[in-house]
Image 1 (cartoon, protein in one colour):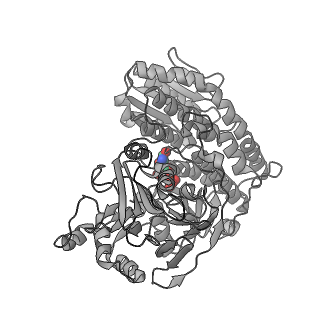
Image 2 (cartoon, rainbow, N blue to C red; image 1 turned 30 degrees about the horizontal axis):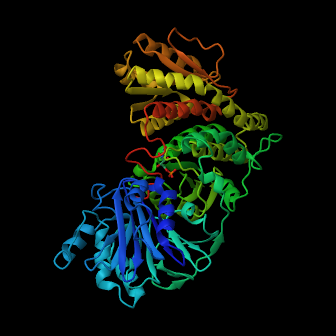
Image 3 (spheres, rainbow, N blue to C red; image 1 turned 60 degrees about the vertical axis):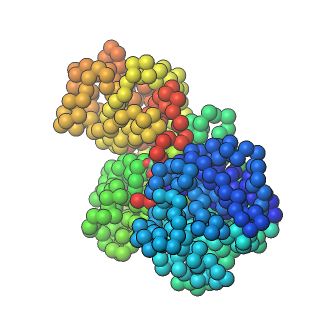
Length: 611
Ligand code: M6R
């Protein structure tokens, strides 16, 4: 949430900073702002709304000359998304500019203390940092960093510039990520790799608690105790095409259509169709999975939680291990029973979700072992876990998670298979059959794309009929599929949608059913619960609803008015991979028909670094 960027070098800072904001805009898009150092003062430009609004307001970069500066794209926490609340924030003298990602929990006390001598211009928690630095930014930068560290409580990635010191940009991290890109006579700073890699492959990731500064020639760092530290310089390859839409109108559509490739990447060299064995080459993963485990606790948020819910079924089925999938935002404040024989699996695309990280720290304190399933290499989660399984999904830019959901499912499926084989609870013949099915998934997902014209028609019908409420139902491994379908729809269409276990309908939700409710059911033949689900659907039809059914049954008993979306899936265990795709497409096509902002839905951000 919020993207921060900084630059010092020989080139004009303003266009580079705006480009960095554009590449990180999925982190928040309530307002944007840039401060460039110009002969002892700041050229400060801010605008509510998107980076595009900022660019429009500034025109062709007028009066923004300067080769050092900082920039911010905001997801509002404290204070409405207005120009006054947009970052950068200045101190009273106008010489210190500050940008911040996170929440300063004790800002009210600090503000009260400073208000006697300082003039505040915004309602944000972040502005206190500028005023704190006004008092502290002297020759001793280490002292300035130490005073921030001892005063600020909460989560923060703070970047600050001083108008009279164009050779240094200050930074400190406690929670949200901060990365430095080392160029040739120029240095970059950002929340995300996507903003750095187009300029340099040489990346330094600040560890939690690190602070320091960048200059044209590099960076200097101290750890949380103020001791100088060196952090490794990693060389990371940039796949430029992954950051473009590739001719598609939205990143979300591009990412949905990339899923066959995502699945191939996830299974390649990890799964043997001949033996049914799964294995991981990431350091430490095999040891963790082979260790003494009594129980698996999966912790995640949002879409990653839905993937964890599916994995719970797989782990219990294949490995006969007790497993639960917990919402990280709840687990972190519960008093869970975790010990050395508990494997905690933290699932996160970004690896920066604050609640998921809090669970990892809680689990560690209780002696549990921690396995991360994560997409972003170098993320905090990947570094704090005992071992990490990479999702291999590549860059995902659409705020709505799509290809990373299937990549999470793939990694978790392999993990369950591995546990089942290691514990000898999964017979070789069944393992081989599951592996064969997994290797067919890429093709089955590609085939599901042929449903798109039908789904477009359906979306237009929902718009015509002004359908405002949707219910997604499924059972067993496809109960989470229903939850995920509902989340996708509400997230990008702003229509009300609920996901339910079809067997739960008569315990309350059936009261909502009438001809105006859009009901979408996942009903896969081969599942133990197929006949039971058919009965549940009949109960819904009887109350006047017309159904949309995602099914693999060629003989599905459709009623007049039903829309049947047929998918290929021979195996109930792997059906969530395929059944999810029509639901993603439905959310996408409905959002497109409603002209919603698909890649940047209102009020959301891709990486949730505050709780
Ligand atoms: O980066 P993470 O996987 O930890 O993010 C968790 C959720 O915020 C995320 O899955 C969110 O629910 C998606 N945007 C939904 O599409």
